[in-house]
Length: 289
Length: 289
Image (cartoon, rainbow over all chains, first blue to last red; front, side):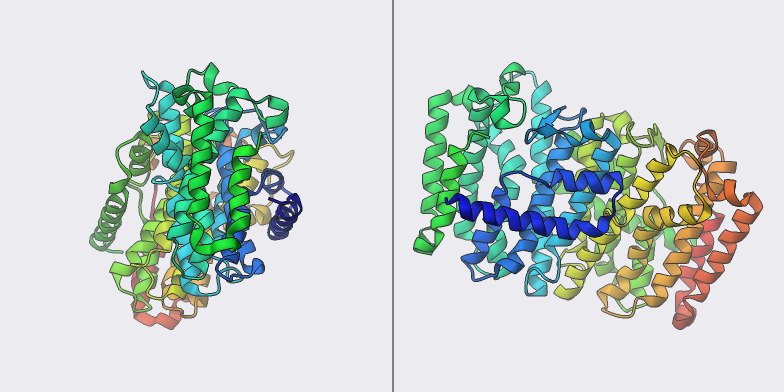
């Protein structure tokens, strides 16, 4: 994928988030919200924008659910980093929110970012029809909640104290919730806005989401903290089962590559128009942070 | 207000919440979600149902936003009780979620309850039109987020470490966010579902919300923990400004009564049909828990 396009899209998403957060004032929670939505690779936002383009939805409209999914992702990271959860001090090369402010501010900023995600997903300047706005909100709630992302996080925490490591099937299920649900929502936001068939983008996203998590495990196993922008090697130290510990490094990488091929094939109905999404899938397994 | 009606409505809301939470499984987070939405006075749910009745919206539809606002309220309590926030061990006469389980479960259960609130508010079996479903989700996001409830909570936390106690004006502003925003959303959900004028119910809710908080301060000042179901006297011990500390007990009670009268008058356009909402307003300042 061309860095120019990716960088341009990321900048537009950032600018949109800055704009919607401007009226929130300058209290510590508002400051922490802005801090938490800054930076990052914007993969989820780009999935929204590219999926929307494939269905003739204007970027100016797609920016709303694109910003929504980044706010939702940012909230999940802020809460995930809390001392009672993963207890991480660094994220994207910067101190985490509870380190830079305090735990109360981190809880509240995360809470407000989740609300903001729904405000953006259901915003009248986003999807053109009321049906699509309502559908974006409803599907986002299901993807984020106790049967989606939070379920994955809960399984992840339970795994830390389990008497034996998870199996490959269990980890795949865990990740489908923890990482996969929001990635699928992002890829499907475009067809939702156009009230079109979501099946090809859903298949793409399911394969991509799993590849994404396998690559995260690879980075955790072989990466260095400076490049990753966060602590690495945590899973091995904690004795947690990962795709790398279960499959071995080479087989994990091969599996991620196969999944990315599957993801690209799922887009065949879109022909050449989907090249950017295919490049994005290949980027996911080439990244080292 | 007739206890029969109130009890019946509360039971229907509980049964609806039980039903929507059934597919969430039996993990600790799902159990904690069920625990957190159990009990309570269901004042917000009753505001939704009664406001909906005034606009010809069937109870079977109003139950969806009614359950939504109770899920949202429950999430706010679970996070508010956390050690890094208000650090409360008891709620509704029971151990709080982080005491009964642990902090990670409390963070995740609160997070999932917020998602659930949006799932219920935008549910197709709730509001009859897509426009109303989208509007319920959007307005709920604004009421709950960093310019509504979370802003109030943030101001409340900031007040604890401020060099001087808040003024009456500042406390009124704080409470308009912390308690008022969700109460107003609840009262206005009916006219939103019917796409009707919200002004009378909004005025009612603004006066009621403030009366509600003044009564909470009265309970904290004069109540006992066994009746209140939670710790009392915390504000005075912490040297926090409250409506009672600023106005004195008698004037605070008188102010709450005046506000309830104003709330009842705001409903004049509905005539006798609004008697239940008037009784609910009077109940708010007669309660001792």
